[in-house]
Image (cartoon, rainbow, N blue to C red; front, top):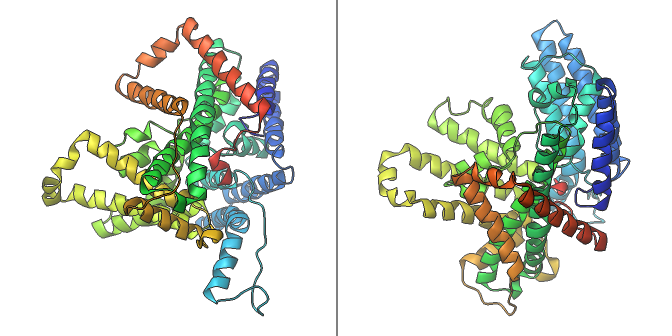
Length: 480
């Protein structure tokens, strides 16, 4: 079920209204049923994969807690991790592996040892709920969280519908205890949740989708557009993916808040970052912290020597790229971020280079550096093969578009950004800047009923008209 659909506009209020009428015991069961229904609305058979992850992970954790030896606990933890990684590999990386095998050996269809692609459909949210399950198993192994509660509570933790399909990636310590609280209707929660959801719908429907339509034109025919259009595509795509992904997160957090749940923030104004290191502390925070706690720190983090620290950072960002997708383009995207972060760390640790590059400390230059670096690397993130233009892989398309941006190229077509799109972008960015500088100002303004309710009704009314007239674009991160 898409958040940006009339189906969800009926589903969410019904779930909340029924939820508040039930005692605690039945509240959990109701949420579990609603969450599986929410996931089944995309493709009913996918619920079997979610159920597999739930049952297998819980079984290994249950046995791990009853193991009398540390070796036995490690073996069972490994089983829980590998089971989820196997699920992820089969549906996300199997075809990429088979294609790589065929390319490496120069095999074509019809050759004796050629292996055809499995052609499996990528289940929505599989990258998110598998990481959530792995994090739960590791936390139990480390004894960071208590193990009380049965499989139904764990199933609700992994399938909780607001954040199931595209995060935030929840930690057991942040969510499990909330399922044991009796939530009653509170007008303050409803108002706060509705405000966040309206903000999310604004980002998605009024900012991201119009930007996406322009970006699609340029990415579909890159040779027809000039270098200036490539830069425009890069910047608009950065705004699109931010509005799309952070918009989803706002709706998810708001839907949970309306029922009394607190879901942690996943974005904190990333385009106001002064470096790529700072950027990743503000962008997709739940993934960044997951990688930090379960990959970077176990590798040694920054507690080891400089070279090993660089290696740990490199590996972590490489895994981030691989997590996002099966393809060389995603690997290059992750390695590009790793390279920039390594350079930043080297400069920051060198007194000589800090002095030589002190002029880069000017705030506007740092903001431009981080935004444009992120935007240009998105060429690899967004690129798709264009065989009719001689670009056989997504990585080739990404390199080609980056080259056209950095080396002047003319184009036969021009692109115009409508004024209403520019206005929506300006409102979003100015609001972000204002909230960063004066965090209490906007909440104080939106406490006024004469501002809050007309704004909410206007945005929701517009979205309902859009969703009723046509299918809205799926959220970008649904493909991950």
